[in-house]
Image 1 (tube, rainbow, N blue to C red):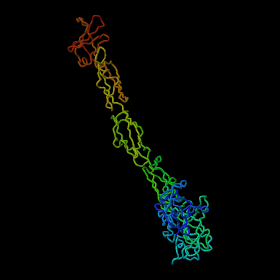
Image 2: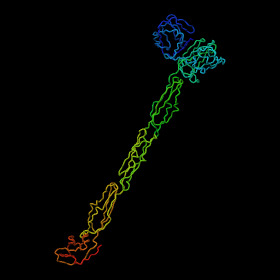
Image 3: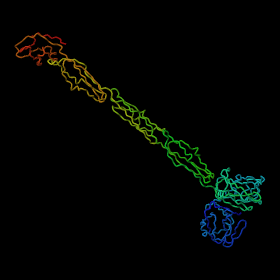
Image 4: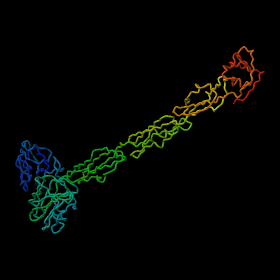
Length: 599
């Protein structure tokens, strides 16, 4: 089998160099139906020619020292066309007699593998046609495989109905491939072939686009000129397609065609774009944040057909995320089954302080009779968090309360820490005040007799009978100070005393008592006889009613005669001046002395 190849360098990138190790002699070269022998030092070469706007590779005998602009599909690269003299070429008979399509299809960048029509890799149910001549399976789509020959299954070639106004034969490649050209033949049995055609391609078997020239116009390819010569036409630019249709536009006698599709599997991964890793804060008062990255996960492909992204971003987002790191992995798969994956992480952080609640500042009174008060606020010191997890309170209120507090102000500070280490603090002050009056004790009201007859006064001492105490435990101050007020000399009559006690908190209390000083219960009067035998002005009074005399004192017989009272040996001496000059009065047991109650 022999090929005439029409190309337009859609993926060729330079020239090739071949080095002759031995001279090629009588090289057989098929130039398109005729095999010629090259003369000595000439070789069969693929020469690029222009055939009415199409680049055509023709085999011809050329001098081995000449460099030609050849397609870059062999192992060695050539210098650019600006330096053709640097290249030389020699080939073997095999290279001349077989089409120079590398088995890997991609040497030096080429993509020209047969994609399975000829060898049956593409099954018969993936070959379809617009019509079949006489509706006979012998002319069906399966007979359109390149190099098919007449056999029990049918003729060698697909034939359309004569009245088919839009004839085509199609190959479903199964997956997306990069298609770079087609090879065609005419009928193996009849003098029928297609002389020109268009190629249309699709990724979904619904929307077809024509293969175009570089100008963007639909390419019309030159087809066959005989039944069996295979003609290869390369596209100006490779297309990515799963479905390839050949539309005959002109033919010889009848539309009959055998074909192969050239290209290579699309092994290029689609481009999948994920957003960068992100750190987001929870919504205020919540443990989550809502986010939508559905439009930020995108994919594209060299085939121009949008890959499938799994899972569908629109089914994943928007999403409400809790605190922590959440990975999102997406996979894009193109129509050729190539896949690409991207992952990004959204970290949701809680920067919100927990809520901390303390009771308000409070003022409490001491317990009655005590200097302290017992309190328990363990249930009123609370904390909560947007994360819904209870924060830790330090110190633990249960370890602080209940507590007995003394007089004064006591601050309490607590700190709440949530699971994200955010903290909050609250403080409250308990002020314990003493509003209880101190206790002040005064003696009862009392009556006392005079101590000094001549002055009508009494000597009293109550300094130890006036006492004070306080619930604070501190002895309060008494004003006036009893120790500075007593002992005291009091006159006959009522003598009130008032004392005030003040504790350390300024609480006060008062007490009052009265000391009544009275005259003797018994006074005496008598008829006093003059006794001029006394050389001194004094009178002697016998020890009558000793209790009254000694304990309570004597009262002068007549005021203001009495000057002083002396006590001695149980005898009270009353000194004074009589009404009469140089006269004294004496009262003895011999005198008539009468006592009477003066109260």
